[in-house]
Image (cartoon, rainbow, N blue to C red; front, side):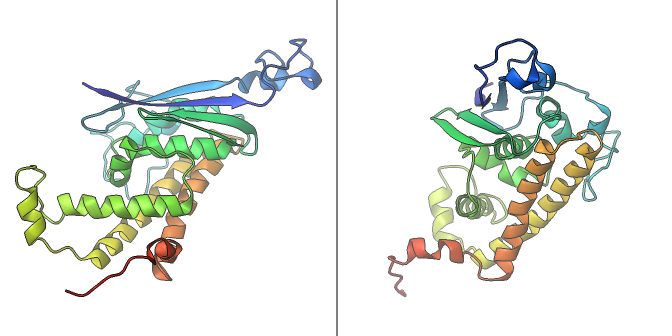
Length: 273
């Protein structure tokens, strides 16, 4: 099986400036001084099957909060007999545990290495975690998150709302073309299908809004899961940030949908046939 790897490297401020004395006032996050023991630089690799775009799980079981029935999402279709553990929670467990004592405002250089390039941003911790969480959730096997799975192949960390909308709408239209529209994915028949198909863009966008509403429920469920396990806010606010994207999408749809992108296309001249 081919492996698609996305590597996240969190480099924290002053990590090389500690005098290793154990004095917190002189601490530069060496990992040996008081409360900085949880502020070590952190490297995490997301391994994905390139053919199926599914996460290659490291564990079959996890802590209490990853069990399916522990604050199970209201719209979860799974049963404990088939899935004793929530697949999303199980795959996020190591990352959540690594940052469970850290705060969202803490600064870090976050390097993200994909197959094509390396991204780097000096940002707050919640932004880095939001990006990593989103990639893992998309390919973990949750039926509500799987709409994001194709985007993992072209992962764009630290995406703005406009970038996310542009990528999501474009991807979902293609997804519907190959899926719900009944279009064959066989390359030899695609040309004929294109010539004969008629896809309602407005119907597709309504369907995408419904998908995002389900994602809101998943994000809320994940936040409830970690609420008692995590006492600081880095992980929590990462889920809040993910949910904000979903909520803003619904607001955009109900108002002047896609207006934030309209200016990009004003130069195009559309003519009636």
